[in-house]
Amino acid sequence: MQEPFNITHNGDEANDDALLMQRIAAGDQQAFRDLMQRHLGRTVRLAARILGSSGAAEDVAQEAFVRVWKHAGNWEDPARAGAKFTTWLYRIVLNLCIDEKRKRSFTDIDAIPEQADETPDAEANMQRREKSQRVKAALDTLPERQRAAFVLCFYEDYSNKDAADMLGISVKAIESLLVRARRSLRDLLQDEEENRKRGGAET
Amino acid sequence: MTLDEFKNLLEIYSGDLSRWPAAKLQDAVALAKQVPAAQALLDEAVALDHKLRHYDVPQTDLAALENRIMAAIADVPAAADPRAAEAPAPWSLFGWRPAYIFAPSGGLLAAALIGFMIGSAPVTHKEFLLDPSFYSVDVIMSGDADIYEGSLF
Image 1 (spheres, chains in turn purple, yellow):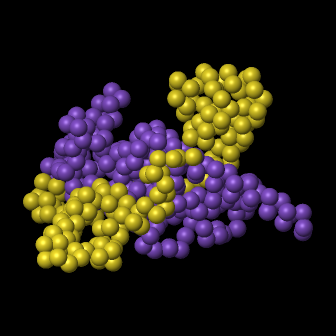
Image 2 (cartoon, rainbow over the protein chains, first blue to last red; image 1 turned 30 degrees about the vertical axis):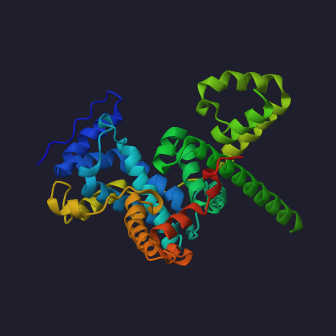
Image 3 (cartoon, chains in turn yellow, orange; image 1 turned 90 degrees about the vertical axis):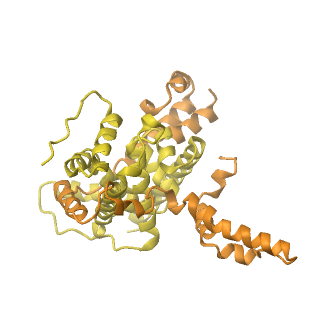
């Protein structure tokens, strides 16, 4: 049994990832588990925001990490002019998400109405869910690249440079995608709000 | 900083000024203080950010998923295993892989050369489109094609 990876806590996450990847390339399953513990949460969240379905996001995360396991030997350490592990991982994730979106229009199990909430916060919870659904619906209308760029920068707080590396495009192109995404989201949410107000006034 | 530049930066970096490049921040804050229209744009951006932050994603049982993945790799050869070396690289984005472009294109190029040498049209437009690698790139670029053409706004 391999020893768990001893994280350096020196703030050099990329270096820790590189060390883990070397061990994974040699077939070390404990190193693979350690690497997953560092990145699985964010991977699932990123995929869920892009796909709009947590079930599909879990499948994508699983496939991405299986590919990491299989291809760890192909990854090159940034110290040798390769890409950061996270850039490599999220490229795989984004690619899989886009394939998934194109391949099938899945039933969104997250959108299935939940059973009646009878807790004291029921009203507030319902309002929160409705607000979340409205944003999700708006995000779903964005073209793939705009949605990916927006999720990476706005929700996952990556720099424009990191997001550009992950999407394999220039920083200028990322900026363009972010501007378009934001304008579309603003207009969609504004229209939706006005329609809701009009609907409320008529009833 | 002009109001247009301020607006453009708000659309790129959002109303959260902590995300802005340090080099722009001082001018942006000064403009918002001095020009009411800039402050109004900033307020609008912050309100939009607030709405967008309502998007929650359901919690995932990460421990269960981690175990599922460990079970999935149990039957998969590791990178060190020579069988794994035969698998294709997984990190191409949007299905685009240089090899997909150049390998089939090599065949087309050879066909074009032979066609030229025997004096007939080498590769028709139709045949060119049948090459799956080019079809793939065409689909990929269809969403935001103009970001590759220089003018962004």
